[in-house]
Image (cartoon, rainbow, N blue to C red; front, side, top):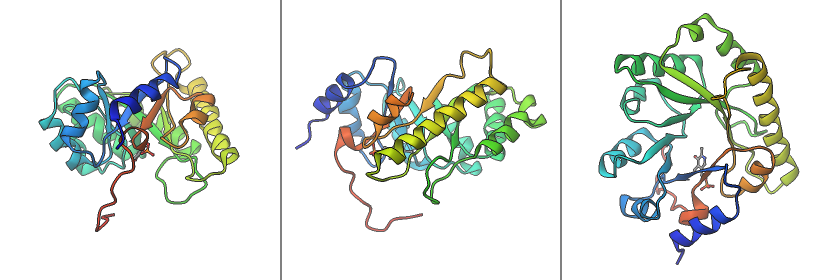
Length: 229
Ligand SMILES: *Cc1c(COP(=O)(O)O)cnc(C)c1O
């Protein structure tokens, strides 16, 4: 039996104090999430809109929800009223939609741009050129209800530590390039969301400020019988 509280304590003891932990609660039920909540933790991450909205309405309102999965523009409206941070902005179209919906309710939504750093083909994310295009676009200059606080990335799922480290380092290098060009005096552009249960140590060594941790706290997730795309 995994002890969730113990896992959380062990995790906190193994990381520097400036690193934020986002507890990834996808597939976990409200009762399990409450165990982490009652230990004092408030930042949780979800990757599916439906699952997030139903949990958010069932759990305490002071939870800070982070959206970490691929977000479709037609679902933006469902999370904008309460989301704390969207880590997974992967197109100008999506960013525009978040700004529009946030504007409708006069809320400011904090976002990260998701960058593609893995050698794997399958993961979502922007490349540096696309990020430069977005941040340099006239559209971006007119947006008044979003704030960009940094970048998110996922390394290749592999035992090859050298490769993972190199990918995290490239995210950090790109973060510095983007900061220099577009946010030189903006102290809020300071987040690097990188590192999961299997690679957060490397990610922190390479400059991560936010790690997204699921299995190291909850144990292995049960796989759905009929995976949906
Ligand atoms: C599931 C997930 C995580 C957490 O992964 P673990 O290996 O369980 O820690 C982190 N980030 C994203 C985007 C995820 O989908």
